[in-house]
Image 1 (tube, helix red, strand yellow):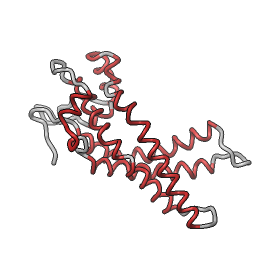
Image 2 (cartoon, helix red, strand yellow; image 1 turned 60 degrees about the horizontal axis):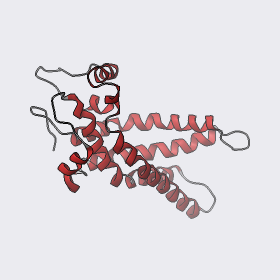
Image 3 (cartoon, one colour; image 1 turned 60 degrees about the vertical axis):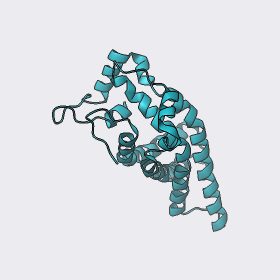
Image 4 (cartoon, one colour; image 1 turned 90 degrees about the horizontal axis):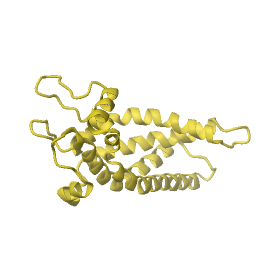
Length: 210
């Protein structure tokens, strides 16, 4: 839904859009493509999420530990947390970008009912190695700020929501993660929209971007 909403272009008439809102998008996908249409691009998402999260989490903790050792008093400054998070976001792009561009192209393929069936391997073959990194600058523009916001906010709220002995239960961890995710996702949505427009395959008559 997010990908299709971000990729909406003006049609024959100024302001003409395929989907009025997210719920309209869900309704039309289910009606014309079936419920499984909502799961387009699932395979590259599943393939990519493991190395992406593993690298991001490892890099954040690694940089944080470096700063903790450097400071020598088991404390970390806010700017150091932001730097650690930003480095974590940058490190994941090498895995994120190729899988994102394949996922996006699979997700919008169902909008053309009469078009040929799109497969992940076909997309990879058509793009080539260089093409898989199309839109990588926009991916950096999204992933670096996201992690630079998310990780420090999560760490601070985890401490704030801990019990008297300094421990966190599943509820407080979930709450801290959700609170951190809201500003991070909100503030990087413009970069995410740009990335989608760059990575999707424009159709005849649609705007293209350099």
